[in-house]
Image: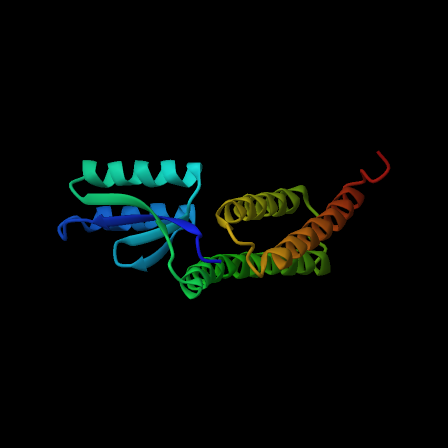
Length: 181
Protein backbone atom coordinates (compact mmCIF):
# COMPACT_ATOMS: atom_id res chain seq x y z
CA UNK A 1 0.00 0.00 0.00
CA UNK A 2 2.96 2.36 0.39
CA UNK A 3 3.32 4.57 -2.60
CA UNK A 4 -0.23 5.95 -2.58
CA UNK A 5 -0.18 9.53 -3.74
CA UNK A 6 -2.05 12.17 -1.82
CA UNK A 7 -2.75 15.79 -2.53
CA UNK A 8 -1.88 17.84 0.49
CA UNK A 9 -3.29 21.34 0.87
CA UNK A 10 -1.61 23.38 3.58
CA UNK A 11 -3.43 26.56 4.43
CA UNK A 12 -3.01 29.34 6.91
CA UNK A 13 -5.65 32.01 7.31
CA UNK A 14 -5.33 35.20 9.34
CA UNK A 15 -7.01 34.84 12.74
CA UNK A 16 -9.11 37.88 11.92
CA UNK A 17 -10.68 36.02 8.98
CA UNK A 18 -12.67 33.28 10.71
CA UNK A 19 -15.19 33.35 7.87
CA UNK A 20 -12.39 32.38 5.46
CA UNK A 21 -11.35 29.49 7.72
CA UNK A 22 -14.96 28.29 7.93
CA UNK A 23 -15.37 28.71 4.17
CA UNK A 24 -12.27 26.62 3.49
CA UNK A 25 -13.45 23.98 5.96
CA UNK A 26 -16.84 23.77 4.19
CA UNK A 27 -15.28 23.66 0.76
CA UNK A 28 -12.86 20.90 1.71
CA UNK A 29 -15.51 18.81 3.52
CA UNK A 30 -17.88 19.17 0.57
CA UNK A 31 -15.18 17.72 -1.66
CA UNK A 32 -14.55 14.86 0.76
CA UNK A 33 -11.11 15.94 1.98
CA UNK A 34 -9.91 14.87 5.40
CA UNK A 35 -8.27 17.19 7.87
CA UNK A 36 -4.91 15.82 8.97
CA UNK A 37 -4.18 18.77 11.26
CA UNK A 38 -5.29 22.38 11.49
CA UNK A 39 -4.95 23.76 7.99
CA UNK A 40 -3.68 20.50 6.49
CA UNK A 41 -6.07 18.68 4.18
CA UNK A 42 -5.62 15.46 2.19
CA UNK A 43 -7.33 14.15 -0.93
CA UNK A 44 -6.43 11.21 -3.15
CA UNK A 45 -4.30 12.42 -6.03
CA UNK A 46 -6.29 12.75 -9.25
CA UNK A 47 -6.51 15.42 -11.96
CA UNK A 48 -9.94 16.53 -10.74
CA UNK A 49 -8.86 16.72 -7.10
CA UNK A 50 -5.63 18.42 -8.15
CA UNK A 51 -7.50 21.18 -9.93
CA UNK A 52 -9.82 21.57 -6.96
CA UNK A 53 -6.85 21.88 -4.57
CA UNK A 54 -5.16 24.47 -6.82
CA UNK A 55 -8.37 26.47 -7.12
CA UNK A 56 -8.87 26.35 -3.36
CA UNK A 57 -5.29 27.47 -2.73
CA UNK A 58 -5.79 30.38 -5.15
CA UNK A 59 -9.00 31.32 -3.38
CA UNK A 60 -7.28 31.27 0.03
CA UNK A 61 -4.44 33.47 -1.25
CA UNK A 62 -6.90 35.88 -2.89
CA UNK A 63 -8.63 36.29 0.48
CA UNK A 64 -5.40 37.14 2.34
CA UNK A 65 -4.27 33.70 3.46
CA UNK A 66 -1.38 31.44 2.52
CA UNK A 67 -1.79 28.09 0.83
CA UNK A 68 0.38 25.44 -0.76
CA UNK A 69 -0.50 22.27 -2.66
CA UNK A 70 1.80 19.25 -2.68
CA UNK A 71 1.60 15.76 -4.11
CA UNK A 72 3.03 13.48 -1.45
CA UNK A 73 3.68 9.79 -1.08
CA UNK A 74 3.25 8.18 2.29
CA UNK A 75 6.37 6.46 3.57
CA UNK A 76 4.53 3.84 5.62
CA UNK A 77 1.69 1.41 4.95
CA UNK A 78 0.20 2.30 8.35
CA UNK A 79 0.01 5.96 7.34
CA UNK A 80 -1.86 5.07 4.15
CA UNK A 81 -4.27 2.87 6.09
CA UNK A 82 -4.78 5.58 8.69
CA UNK A 83 -5.61 8.23 6.08
CA UNK A 84 -7.82 5.83 4.13
CA UNK A 85 -9.64 4.95 7.36
CA UNK A 86 -10.22 8.66 8.00
CA UNK A 87 -11.89 8.93 4.59
CA UNK A 88 -14.01 5.86 5.23
CA UNK A 89 -15.05 6.97 8.72
CA UNK A 90 -16.08 10.41 7.45
CA UNK A 91 -18.09 9.01 4.57
CA UNK A 92 -19.69 6.31 6.69
CA UNK A 93 -20.97 9.02 9.05
CA UNK A 94 -22.68 10.59 6.05
CA UNK A 95 -24.13 7.27 4.91
CA UNK A 96 -25.42 6.59 8.43
CA UNK A 97 -27.16 9.98 8.49
CA UNK A 98 -28.69 9.32 5.06
CA UNK A 99 -29.90 5.89 6.20
CA UNK A 100 -31.52 7.53 9.23
CA UNK A 101 -33.30 10.08 7.02
CA UNK A 102 -34.47 7.29 4.71
CA UNK A 103 -35.93 5.49 7.69
CA UNK A 104 -37.66 8.71 8.72
CA UNK A 105 -39.27 8.91 5.28
CA UNK A 106 -40.37 5.29 5.46
CA UNK A 107 -41.86 5.91 8.91
CA UNK A 108 -43.71 8.92 7.58
CA UNK A 109 -45.11 6.87 4.70
CA UNK A 110 -46.17 4.17 7.13
CA UNK A 111 -47.88 6.72 9.38
CA UNK A 112 -49.69 8.36 6.45
CA UNK A 113 -50.81 4.94 5.26
CA UNK A 114 -52.18 4.05 8.71
CA UNK A 115 -54.00 7.39 8.82
CA UNK A 116 -55.15 6.92 5.20
CA UNK A 117 -53.74 10.33 4.20
CA UNK A 118 -53.82 9.40 0.51
CA UNK A 119 -53.67 12.85 -1.08
CA UNK A 120 -51.67 14.26 -3.96
CA UNK A 121 -50.26 16.89 -1.58
CA UNK A 122 -48.81 14.17 0.65
CA UNK A 123 -47.53 12.29 -2.39
CA UNK A 124 -45.82 15.43 -3.74
CA UNK A 125 -44.19 16.11 -0.38
CA UNK A 126 -42.90 12.55 -0.10
CA UNK A 127 -41.66 12.51 -3.70
CA UNK A 128 -39.75 15.71 -2.99
CA UNK A 129 -38.19 14.13 0.11
CA UNK A 130 -37.13 11.09 -1.93
CA UNK A 131 -35.59 13.33 -4.59
CA UNK A 132 -33.59 15.15 -1.90
CA UNK A 133 -32.36 11.85 -0.49
CA UNK A 134 -31.43 10.62 -3.97
CA UNK A 135 -29.48 13.82 -4.66
CA UNK A 136 -27.78 13.59 -1.30
CA UNK A 137 -26.68 10.02 -1.98
CA UNK A 138 -25.24 11.16 -5.32
CA UNK A 139 -23.21 13.84 -3.51
CA UNK A 140 -21.97 11.38 -0.91
CA UNK A 141 -20.94 8.94 -3.67
CA UNK A 142 -18.91 11.69 -5.36
CA UNK A 143 -16.84 11.96 -2.14
CA UNK A 144 -16.59 8.24 -1.47
CA UNK A 145 -13.08 7.60 -2.72
CA UNK A 146 -12.58 4.27 -0.92
CA UNK A 147 -16.01 2.58 -0.90
CA UNK A 148 -17.41 3.30 2.52
CA UNK A 149 -18.58 0.33 4.54
CA UNK A 150 -22.14 1.71 4.72
CA UNK A 151 -22.48 2.44 0.98
CA UNK A 152 -24.45 -0.72 0.18
CA UNK A 153 -26.70 -0.22 3.21
CA UNK A 154 -27.50 3.29 2.00
CA UNK A 155 -28.36 1.99 -1.47
CA UNK A 156 -30.66 -0.66 -0.01
CA UNK A 157 -32.41 1.77 2.32
CA UNK A 158 -33.00 4.26 -0.49
CA UNK A 159 -34.43 1.45 -2.63
CA UNK A 160 -36.80 0.56 0.24
CA UNK A 161 -37.93 4.18 0.26
CA UNK A 162 -38.64 4.02 -3.46
CA UNK A 163 -40.70 0.85 -3.07
CA UNK A 164 -42.63 2.24 -0.10
CA UNK A 165 -43.33 5.43 -2.03
CA UNK A 166 -44.54 3.43 -5.06
CA UNK A 167 -46.96 1.54 -2.81
CA UNK A 168 -48.15 4.82 -1.28
CA UNK A 169 -48.58 6.30 -4.75
CA UNK A 170 -50.83 3.38 -5.75
CA UNK A 171 -52.97 4.04 -2.67
CA UNK A 172 -53.25 7.72 -3.58
CA UNK A 173 -54.37 6.85 -7.11
CA UNK A 174 -56.84 4.34 -5.73
CA UNK A 175 -58.23 6.90 -3.24
CA UNK A 176 -58.55 9.47 -6.01
CA UNK A 177 -60.31 6.98 -8.28
CA UNK A 178 -57.47 6.91 -10.79
CA UNK A 179 -56.33 3.34 -10.31
CA UNK A 180 -58.02 2.15 -13.53
CA UNK A 181 -56.83 4.98 -15.75
